[in-house]
Amino acid sequence: MITDGFVYISALIGIAALLIYLPKIIRGKAAETFFSFAPPVVLIYLTMMILCTAKIWDLQATAAAYSAIKNPVLYAMVFLMLLRCDIRKIIKLGPKMLIGFFSATVSIGLGFVVSYAIFGRFLGENAWKSLGALCGSWMGGGGNMLAIQAALDVSEADMGYALVMDSACATVYVMFLLWAIGFSKVFNRWTKADTKAIDAVGLALEAETRANTQIITFQSIIFLLGLGLVVSALSQYLGTLLNGIISFFDKSTWTVLVVTALGVGLAITPIGKIKGTEELSNVMLYITIALIASRADLGAMANAHWWLLTGFSILLIHIAVMIILAKIFKLDIFTCCVASLANIGGTATAPVLAGTYSSALVPVGIVMALLGYVIGTGGGLIVAKLMSMI
Image (cartoon, rainbow, N blue to C red; front, side, top):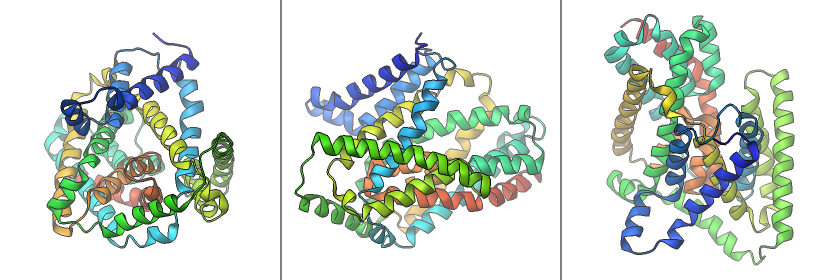
């Protein structure tokens, strides 16, 4: 069992690197078919979950290394991705993003109510309170969950199974979305989605990249790496400071807002033209995914089968309703997936998913996740009230 923090981080990055490089090693039609259904990003997620469950590393002993690396790398990654983004082009994506976001919110609420009606009697007395708090988290974020927990007077003990459900279901769901977004062409053709706006953003940024005649040098890489890490550190400091002054958002949300402001602002300066942002941010993206998945110990969920069943029932209802609404409103898979994860995963994971689709669209994931913080508390309380009436 790995207990040393450095060995743990090294193992994660080494395994992720090997899985990313596999398509270059294993070739042929069979391999091509396999990697179309199981791209490296999904393989990383699945492998890390299996290794964590198999106790290859000690979660407690490596917790300090995880905490020291995960968020700083995540914020640096988001910043570097934003350096390639012209916010004026993002605005052209139009109102369908909002339709997708609120479709996700309503379908999540419906999933909680219906699933509680089915499984509530197996979850224990006052389980609706814990689920209501969790619904606030799945509509917004951790701050919304804590607000509802306080409003409904839910004890930490009562929240235990809900948090287990949150950890297991959200982890599996992120992996599912990373896999599903690879079928964008098939899904968009079925829903008859007009992806011109999204494609135009991507094409415009690709054209700018091609027009940029700079080459990637070690000087540009070290400059971008240093800048990204400095911005990450500064943003975390300012996030904590702003949270102490204005507590409407938690410190993580304030940090993301600061990162976003700096990234979007510097993107229109010569810094945004420096080559290497895409390559370096992609490296950080895969490291972040490996880190997140490495804490998903599925073995810890063995005694919470009814709660896990409830959680997956909520997600299945949410997915089914989203597919129906996608067909009705002709939504593309990017809008559906990012809207869904903006609700369930918040600012920590929505930009990651957006980045796997196109790093140009990371701001969309951030903006949609921030919307969740505005409606999460109210939405969770409404759903809790509906469940209490069942």
